[in-house]
Length: 161
Length: 154
Image 1 (cartoon, each protein chain N blue to C red):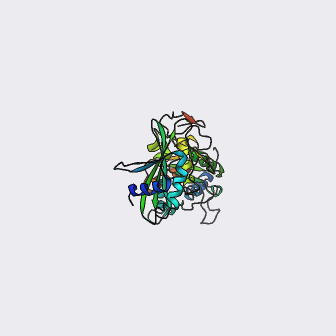
Image 2: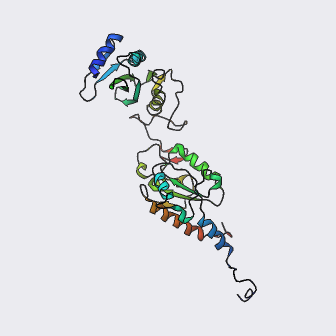
Image 3: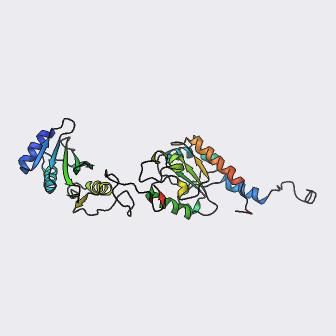
């Protein structure tokens, strides 16, 4: 501290680049605005005033994947939809994060056996950062998952990807 | 009008070749595949019958045949009737009723998608829900589940 002591004005904050960038990334996650099934209803409820995802800086649901950095896979992914989900993920710019919301997106949920149409988990097509179990998960659970993701982002470093 | 009366009116117009089965749960009129178009036309356009709404069109995989089931409703008279058409298991083929009730377009595509029943004269008989490159018809009783689809486990 001695090197910079008394050399700057009083309103200067010293921090690391990692901390500063992660602080920005974690607190303004912009989700892609898309839902696949009933979990999307809970996701919408999380966006509304009662649960208010804006408290965590993730309220800017973008209709274009190019402007988003968080994908909340909210609902059942059918095999026909899987290629579209993958395409949306690939269209998002780095850094990008994925939350699998609900049992279906985590593992196929109630369709895990005897279904010819449902993908058995989002992680078969895209890398998932946070899994939120529940059928569907309550808005509190989605916010818990969001906070877990923020914790994850804060641990990352720009030095190594 | 009850199904019985509807059947009598229909037979007066159409003649022989249709059959009434008075099942207490669901009375229905059995129609041969080659007559379904004409029967549908009478049901729709006769003012006494006036079946302007095709509520549902579905199929059943019976041991001996595929049965296509038509659930009809008349908004004007507030009455219902059920039609059944049987088609053989090998080469299932039924004339389309798309020209009479346009709702049949998607219903028939769905039955084609899941049962593999072909509808003669349909304007766009392609899969509606499953991917275009899907093989087989999943709601058939003898359907064998594939292990994977495009390399992903099913």
